Length: 139
Image 1 (cartoon, one colour):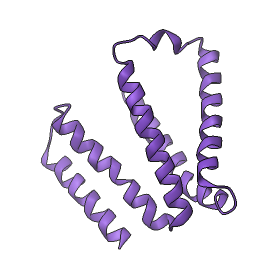
Image 2: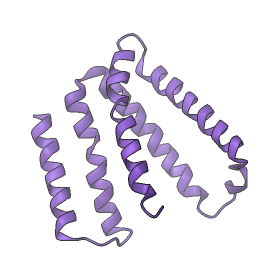
Image 3: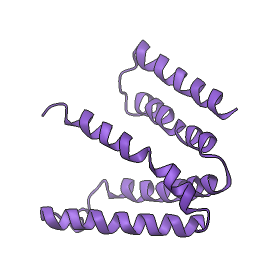
Image 4: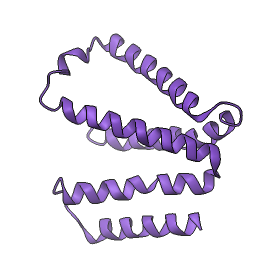
């Protein structure tokens, strides 16, 4: 059970890989802002149902000392999703997704610099190659 995060990472990768192509098709006739609203409303309902099934509640965390981080994260997520969906509506998936995907490399750098996670040569090369891959894919 120690490596559940790897299975979940693969599930996230597999399912999230379908998001951009499906969004692109949907936004041929649905405005991007509406697509953000509808997809996130569905996500909220599904996650709310999962929490109800598990007997958990988010309300106790509203006064948690870390709650402001969630509020800031939610704001960044909303801005990022609005920009991402609009970019997908306007541009090719093959260019928008790699540029958007730079968040992986940048988040890794933030983890190393701000959260003091370890930096290895392999991680450094991975980040550098990820950036190079995005540049090459987006040209």
